[in-house]
Length: 184
Picture 1 (tube, rainbow, N blue to C red):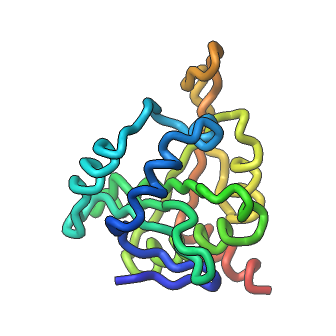
Picture 2 (tube, one colour; picture 1 turned 90 degrees about the vertical axis):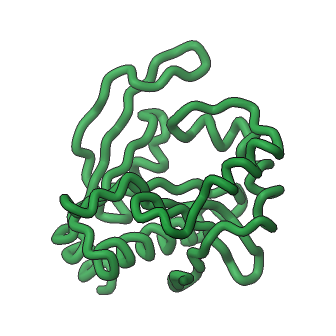
Picture 3 (cartoon, helix red, strand yellow; picture 1 turned 30 degrees about the horizontal axis):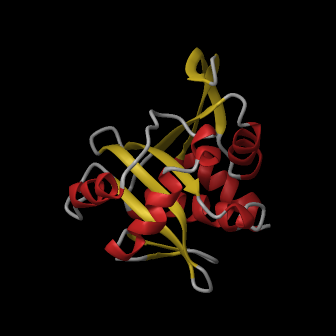
């Protein structure tokens, strides 16, 4: 099943995406702005990761973000889905630097939220960012309706220094309020 936004299409990751994903997985500019561990990723590593994905994974959904005119431009996910408590973690990575600021990220997050809250019946989404990634923090909090819910001190270690983790989240009721404002 594909999920259509106004600009983007969220779809399953395909084998034809692997070369592009491998290039992005080794781009230090991309990973400097994202959390988690990052090591050089071989093509075989990317293939093994792809083979580990399953469409029947009820807890983790990873999508390719696609634009008709361009193809794959990044990835978005809903992971660690907790069906009992109705929450999940969301993350996004735009690999095409030249598309930042064009509205595709906003359309991706709005599409993910609509899918999570209106189709899956989730009640909240969580996310986090490195404190120096102010662009992402402002994007989620000022444009997407998320709130900063906490700071984890000195969580990330990058280029010889510790940086805080900014924890953000949105509930379904906050999304519904935001979507009404967003549509006006």
